[in-house]
Image 1 (cartoon, rainbow, N blue to C red):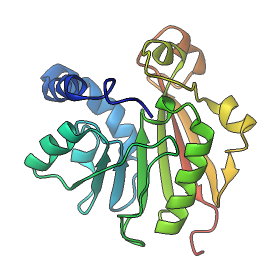
Image 2: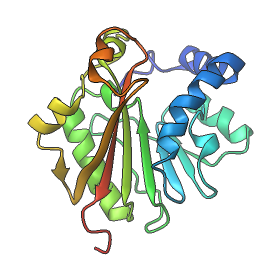
Image 3: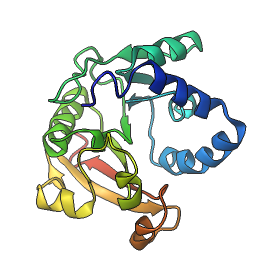
Length: 206
């Protein structure tokens, strides 16, 4: 993932300031609400940042975050947040209990990995082990991807198909949509256009 200098103290301060800005919070609420429509039960917010999604998740949810300054801030605000060890292989979720969480949210995280396909596949494996049945991934469109030098892999539907990630590790893509405006071409003009992909466990009884 990104190096400490990319996501250290200064990064945390910027994220916290954005989270507390009333106007930004209002705009972000429209993005968050579409994610929440697919959330079922206690959830894992992986790479929860400053808690923009975490604060709206159902009771019993937990955040996982690599930035220690954001972990400290969220903990002080009363959220349950675990520290994640940064790794090129992705996130280790072994500290989480099995059969406790129904949904995992990964919002604007996957694009920061150079080996995004391996990270996503490993994450789906972990979700299957934990008993998670819904995985929600949010990734930036083309313009948003190019706007941030810490982005390492442009992930879109073509990428997921070409890397055989549409149906894998016991999960299938059940929904995908774009926002704002459910039209793909908007990503070429609007920096905050994003893609949401929802995976469902192929056989939730297994």
